[in-house]
Length: 74
Image (cartoon, rainbow, N blue to C red; front, side):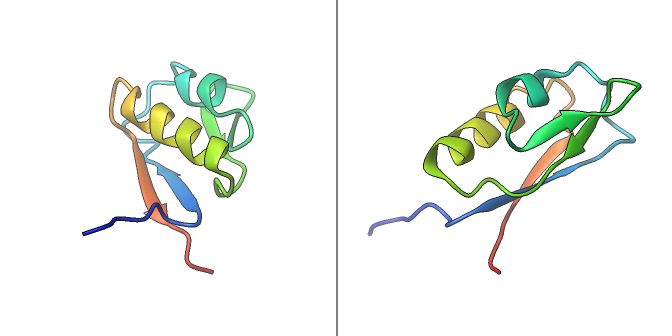
């Protein structure tokens, strides 16, 4: 059985859980940015192999596990 990575991943951040450590936008700067208070903002979906790896790493390294990744099936 072969599994295929999604063509794109769309992150969602639970801002009620997020503490604003900034690991996500430091790890995946093409997908996340920060607002004026240091909390993450999703810029869009991860669409390249490199961006998908980065956003998966960002989600895995979030201390609060505030990032959920969804297949972007547009």
